[in-house]
Amino acid sequence: MEVVKIIGIGLVALILIIILKQYRPEFAVYASLIAGAIIIFLIMDKFSGVITILNNLASKANINNQFLSILLKITGIAFLTEFAVSICKDSGETAIANKIDLGGKAVIIGMSIPIISALLELIVKILP
Image 1 (tube, rainbow, N blue to C red):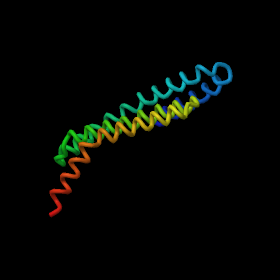
Image 2: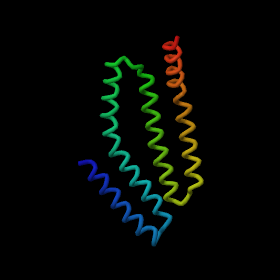
Image 3: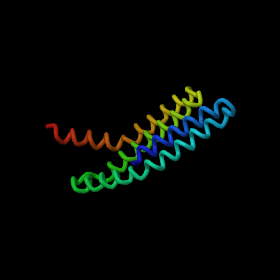
Image 4: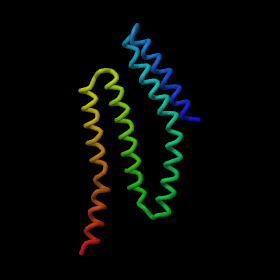
């Protein structure tokens, strides 16, 4: 059960971070980063299976692979941005967290323009 591993790593990291904050607070952020990286690596295997299934469904439904690729990249950017924002907030740097969040949203909007353009072109073709 992967979820038990993830929860276990999270709880061990939490206890370690609480202890580190009392004696060596500068190392608490590093422990949080390492725990987050380990959890992300555990999750990556699950994402590869989902990506394979989505690619198969897209090819069966004749969906443009470019759009699927963009959607997967956007999802990855959203996850990584949320991870970075959480680390910044845990470190007490809310201002930097807000800037990272804004930057991630701007990148996502920029990447979604081809999908929005194709959708608008389709709407124009459908309308009389």
